[in-house]
Figure 1 (tube, one colour):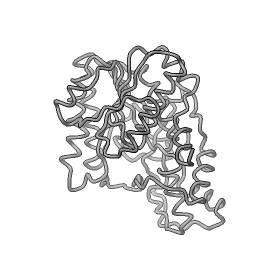
Figure 2: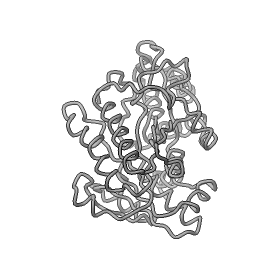
Figure 3: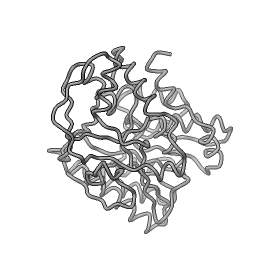
Figure 4: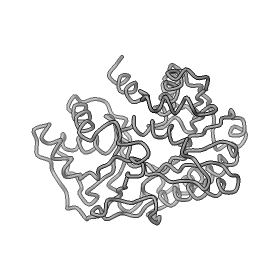
Length: 338
C-alpha cells in the first residue's frame, strides 16, 4: 500500500462493537453523498463490518462521482456504487431501496454569493430524501454551527441547548434538521440528527491546519481560540452505530471528542515537535464553536483515538510533507460566511 492507501485503510477498520451492531441491524445501508471527505470511510467501514460479521447485507454509495478514483476505491472494498444526482427527482426515485440511510449530502463552501444553492442542498433536498425514504431509518449528518458560539468555560453546547445559527450556511443546516424532523414526525420515520464537529485525519482538519501553520511560520488567529475535534475513523463508526439510535420523535447527538481543545495549546504542542515557536495573531475571545460530547460518551464510551494520538499522527504527516486534501475547514470563521 502507498502511505495514503494505508491511511484510508486505517480509517475504515471496524471495531468488535461495530461488527456486533452490524450483525443485529436489519436491512441494507445506503450512504447518500458518499463522495465527500468522510463518506468513503463510512461506506467502506460498513462494508468491512458486514464481511467480518458474516451477514448478508449490501452497502450502496450514492454520489455524482466526478472523481473516478473515488469510485474505484469504493468498488475495490465491495461497496455498490450508484452514480446519481440527488437533486434530480427521477434519479432520486430510482435509487435502490434500503432500510438504513446515512445522509451526508450538503453544501458549505461557496455559500456566500450562492446562497440559494446552499439552501436547496441543505434544506430542500432533505425533504425530498425524507419522503423518498420514509420507510427507512435515517442518520442525518448535521453540524455544530447550528448552535451559537458558546462560552468555552461552560463545557460547550449540549443537545438540549437552543439553536442559534450565524450566517446563511448555518441557518440552512438548521433548516435541514427541521425538515428531517418534520417528516420524521409526519411519517413515523426513525431519525438521528448527527451533529458533527470537527472530523479530522492526517490530511485535513483543524489539527492539520494548525500544524501546517506552525511548521510554515504562518500567524495563527486566536479569536476562535478553541475547537471540538474527533478522529474520522471514530466518526465513521458512530455514524453506522447510530442507526440503532434513530427514533421518532428524533434524537440529536453531538459527535465530538471529550476535550475542548485550546488552539494556542495545540500550536505549542506542534511547535515542540517541530522545534519552532508558533506565531499568534490576536487573543482568545472566550467563545467558540465547541460542543459537549458527554451524551455520545454515555452511549459508546470514549473515542478510540485520543487527542495525543491525533497530534502525533498529524505532526508526523506534516513534518514529512505528506499530501493534503486541500479543503480548509475555515473553523476560524465567526461571522458565518463560507
